[in-house]
Image 1 (cartoon, helix red, strand yellow):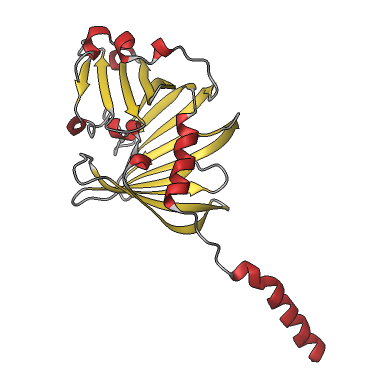
Image 2 (cartoon, rainbow, N blue to C red; image 1 turned 45 degrees about the vertical axis):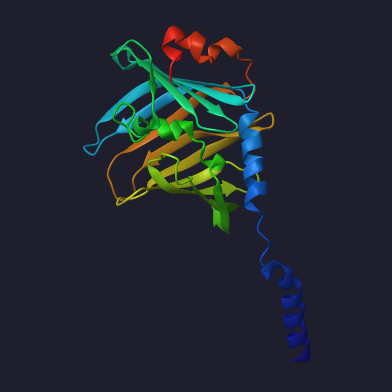
Length: 261
């Protein structure tokens, strides 16, 4: 009996350090690490976006993505390359400090236009994806709080809640991200809309490493409780690509149409 009790106590003593919750990282520390990785990435990727509507009808679009930092801005060019009638280009210029700018051109409308933030919430080709999802600058918002550490997909993730400034136009009141502790890739994102409505959920899978960067190759966007979804699958590319500045410069990509904002 004494030996048995002693064994139990030894087990409890050994487990005690595991039962003590670890201190969560500070929000500024975590956000700075995420932003440093994102801003340092030069990405050239291609793949497809599949939109499935409530009637299970599917539309497939071929896409390409370019991202490069130009000075104090990170420029992202997101293009639909096929089918021909759906071709479009969206170029987001995201400064390290300040408000992003977005330009849009499509096969249907021809001339590029500068889009104000009030138009970023429109669905892209009827899908669950919006221009605001592509801009994806919510880790630069002023309110960032690490709320928990929880298991996700057999690993641990940090949960961080982001809220925009009062004067900042956004279709979201808050965004809650579950960041993989090792890679800092958001594995699950809940985007809570302003006013009523279910949050938009983004789930990232197929995380792989290229150099110092980690990226999800399979991204699903949906509204929990609603039918249909949008899935993005990257089939090729690299996160350490050589990209010329001109490839993501709005004045080169869109010419005179990028002069005004």
